[in-house]
Length: 318
Image (cartoon, rainbow, N blue to C red; front, side, top):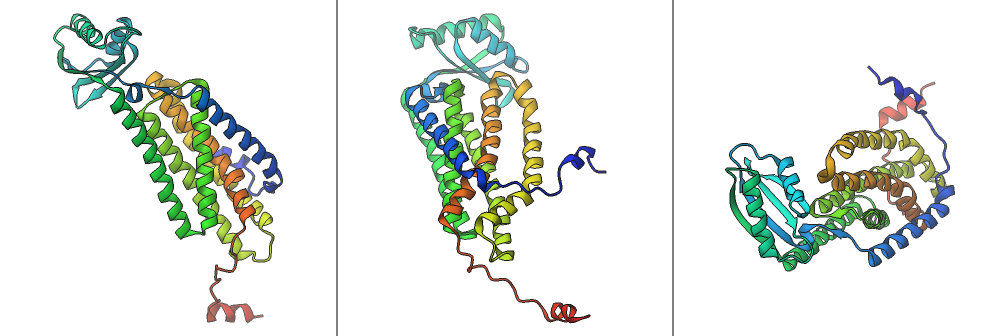
């Protein structure tokens, strides 16, 4: 049974995507420059993973009350309290930054005392500080993972399509990453290791969009050898537009619940992914394809298979 609202989507569209490419290029350039300027001036709101802080591992008599533990940390003056399950259901990892100007050792001891008072029977397995050096290494390794992912994807698209396609895809994904980091900097949303995971997810979704876009473009380049490249791009995008709308809206619907009801812990992760879906879809049309249009493609490399004898005979029948 078909979803009845699908019928409102047009079966075929005739939008002139390439016509608006110069305006989109100017908008993208302004947004990228603005994002870089904001990152240089305001920076990212780094979380405990990248700034350092205090870590306490606990074991509770029953299942760990994560929300109550988080509220207890905030009530006793912890900055940026983070609580997550760890291993068994009655184990939890508490991370927080001590109050400004307080001694880290005294802050940990005070928090241990407060936790034992608020939660009788709790056991403190370990308590330690996450130093700035370790946090800096995590940040470096996180962005190194992003660079490796981009490089491997460039090689993949180079082999599957052409180098022009690979460069266009990587530049478009870089555009998506810069804009996502820029919005996180503007809104000062916390940037942690989960944000790195969100950026990797954005890279995967965005690159998947580029592969589908280029695959449809390559098919039409085989069909319409004499059609101008800009017209082939418009045709290809119009053919896959309904698929893009359905896929993007499905992903957004899946993330909407977590964005609204996930609370402050999930918000940075889900927000980055939602924003990445928007910019990833946009960059597929107005960053990757215009770059291919500027650089051009080798249309003679694709060989159309010769028709079989049966097909020739069928074509000659009256």
